[in-house]
Length: 78
Image (tube, rainbow, N blue to C red; front, side, top):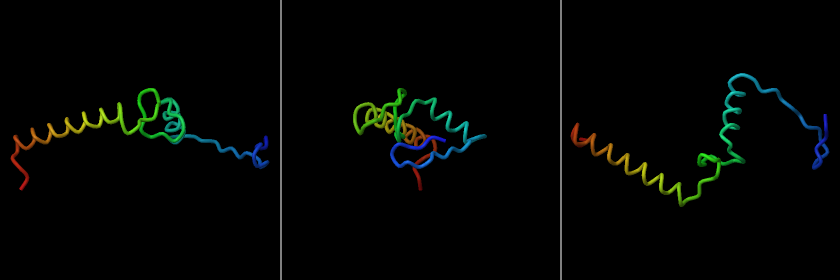
């Protein structure tokens, strides 16, 4: 096995199989780089503005509408 250039230690490899392998392949196919969890369709990190803020407000408005419809249909919470 090759040695790492930084520490000089040997690289250890582990074979990944089964469900974990499927999960990792799915994450790689999404195109996310690094440790980004919140990202757009292109794998770019969402910042606390722009598209992220717009989608958050849009989702919050949709949830508010659903709660209002539910309240009209079943009455207020007691």
